[in-house]
Image (cartoon, rainbow, N blue to C red):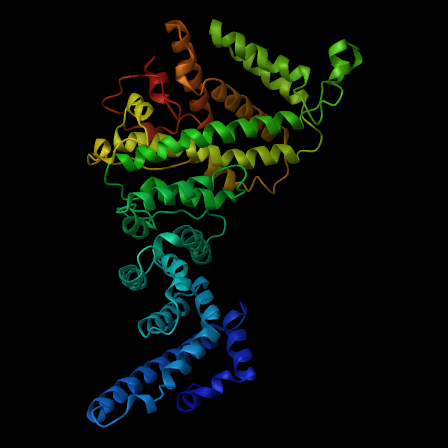
Length: 498
């Protein structure tokens, strides 16, 4: 068929041919050899067409002086463009195939199509970004090269499709991932540990406005309203942790926005968990004036026993009586209020992963770049670029390892049966979150004694939330750590020193 189409390209417009080619390319169960053959046919056609046009060009130069341009009609390039429009979508979708040979031929066809200018390049940009994360260096380089070409001709196209490209690259990684049990990660598993999308970031980072818009769009995916799946959030956090940052402004900007997201998403998360709680049955028997006004506790305000659960925490903030029995009482009090339907619990565990990842990411960037808490606090995005234009002094051996999220994905908690033990761990996580949110902003306390109690509480909550602070991560201690416990996103070192 391929040879017939080279001689008579118009046959490719036939309905039967379109159905045959597109069904072979889009059918997941179709044989790999057939897919490759279809892609090869398209590739050979484009190569032949290119040769034919070059020959026509040479012939034209010989007779150009005598001919009249008005009488000439260039039909052939119009035809190859129309043909490629027909099959483009299916060829691009072939990028998500598990076999590298299929991806290889699909990339060849797209590269030829783009080089001949047969289609508008913007529709290929996200797919090329995705192919830039391929494990094979030759494919990566080819895709990156195409992106560079597009960027030269059409400034702003790459930035416009960057987030879509990141999402697609996650799909490519999912397809390549041979072991479905293992979560998809966003960095290369070699000594460089570079982000899979590092080339994309290096193309965008030059333009401050584009870079900031891109980073904010990525951080917005962690918002509780975005409903992004947990593994994709892990993939994006990996990339954000390993991007090739060059100036201090870049990680500081990310940390600044993590704080904003934490304060909003964290409050929403706690609120929705409170609303799902049921009143303690014992208390319901005692009719009191409070009880009457509060009869719709299921849907609305915080139940009394919830209040009880949080009281020891507030007292402890002042007294600092860190006894485990208090914590046990808290957990038991909340356990009594849990609804029979465990869906809200699972929902909480699911949504909280995004916030945990942001906490980990902030802690990681802080360790990686050696920033002190006060420096992070003082940063303002509206300041002139020159203030934070200094180069980053990267620490070596600091790895991003969000243990809690990895455990969550490996145990497939979202789909597994919920046990008493899992319930307890989710409740503990809820109480730690609650404490963290109460002490999120260090500027609120005025008295000195209060500050240390607050930062102590915050650090304790963070250590607990991050699963003991992930020792691997905190190995790199910041040199210029002036304000010991004033960290909003992880101050485990402070706790240890005390």
